[in-house]
Amino acid sequence: MKLLYSLLLMLHITVGSAALLLFWLPALTPKGSLDHIKFGRYYANTMYIVAGSGMLICLLVLVAPLTIHGDLSNTANQAQKALNISLFAFFLMYISWLTLTSVRHGILVLRVKQARHLLRHPTHLGLLLVLITGGLALLGLGLWFNKVLHLIFGILGTIIGGQMLFYCLRRHIAPRQWWIEHLGAMIGSGIGAYTAFLTFGARQILAGAGYWQLVFWVAPGVIGALVIARLSRKYHLQFQGK
Image 1: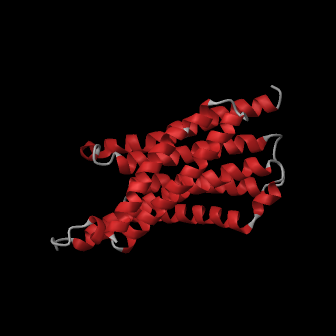
Image 2: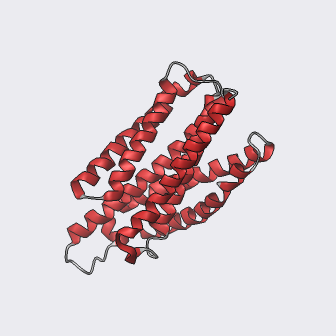
Image 3: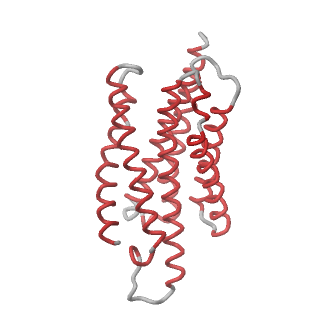
């Protein structure tokens, strides 16, 4: 199991590093251009691999937390160690699911444009419902075990999932609203990727920072939300001719 974990982790880190760089290529190329479409496709495919491998890694940790991350030779507080490891693994698994769902939603809304009835497929709606349910579960764990990150991202994931579900089910949308939805979803996936990197990849570097770690972990979400709000308003006014 440890060997499988190590192989998946190497794949996750390698492809994840590429995804963090690829995120900026479609963002910086003219929207709708061939380069934008090409790099956007590359980014989406790498993010599917990153999210999928991340969920498998977390699943292995949840199945055998002490085997992978614990010290089996030290029997003191084994139950508490296993609980802490499992709680963090569930958090990372949810971030992976949030990233996967955001990328998929962003690609689909661009593909169907105004034909939103195609988004009401049971598979897509089911994925969004899992995102909302998982967010509520993460929120509950945060309240029960006093985990600030679980609280923050439980609320954030529930809101994001609810917004995407509402977009799929609402009766009418503004002209070219699909473009704004695509933009928000893809930036949201980038928020998930950078949050996972700072939470997991830079965890050792920030280990001694105490609650200051929260600044680094929450920063991608705050910055991304501000960018989404600004760009959404910009394009909304632009599409209305104002």
